[in-house]
Image (cartoon, rainbow, N blue to C red):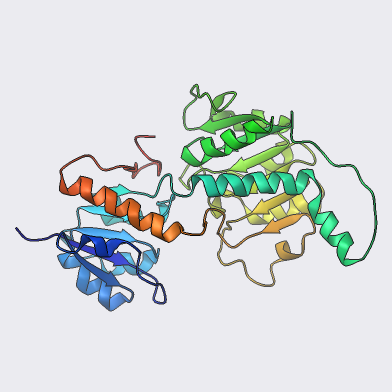
Length: 323
């Protein structure tokens, strides 16, 4: 029986995805780092694993009658993979749901503590060698809205709930969920913002969420509230966010993702005293690449046995369909 061929799309300077050598004898594993390598691999590939999301290149070389039956994204978001020949096909798409949940949730918790305890001011005063007593906030009994009550959002709500934060969520549809006080439909978001001390974005990028946070949404937010974006950059309109920060409407922002990445070196967000910036790394814990490799290997074993794959993604909406 012919072994299936797995192609792994990597960045040009990216090392191999750990763990796939365990598939020796079960599959042929190929790596593609250049356009030429990808173009040569796709016509003979059964499975495509994507760690580097060069969407334009993938779309440019995608062959007619491509034999790929399964595309796996080593990320939570799959919006960059939704090129026309994948979206409008029978190809199954899966993602890395579950790998990054805890890391991102801990990042969010750290961000809330950063602002509640006014740590940015502490660091600024330290540089000036100034001793200045202040009072800070408790997280207990504060209000948080998690925009995107999926796998990552639930882990965020679980951690924050342990510290006494009152957490509500939003999703495409309202539902009951034990880790949230309540999960509202996304359309209810404008009514939830005025009471939230912290607004946390964990949602995927879809047609419903792109540009969701605009000037009007920031005006609805509670004065002094903090925005945390660990979802997707284009969910937030950067110019509107900057204006809300500079006007004092928002108390601060922790930003791990941006409309354009990397954030250019001369962007004014870098110099905002009430902003924390990180380089799209909120969930990247030590050992995360090995965990991604093992997750794919485990799912490949299911695929070989004809069992349903874990983490199938709705190609229309961008969320895990069995969440």
